[in-house]
Amino acid sequence: MSLEDDLTEVKRRLEELARSVIQLERNLAQRREEKPVRTAVGRPEGLVTIPDTPYDSSLWTDSDDEGLGARDRRAP
Image (tube, rainbow, N blue to C red; front, side, top):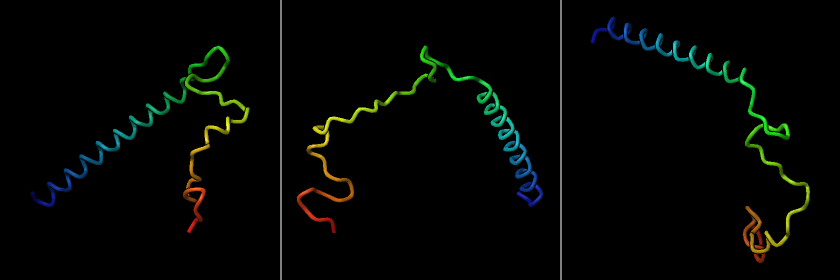
């Protein structure tokens, strides 16, 4: 390929990229305009409520402190 052919191909691909970016921006704008589906309680669908009550300590009895290793050994 000649230099002119290469430059023509690069220009074509840049134009294609620009069209794709414009389409992506339009799709994002449409998604922002759409309102999320809300449940009967008024929360967006898919959200999970985490209770304020403390977790049961028996969940952690056999766990190691992350990054510190086992409880009966010292960290380096």
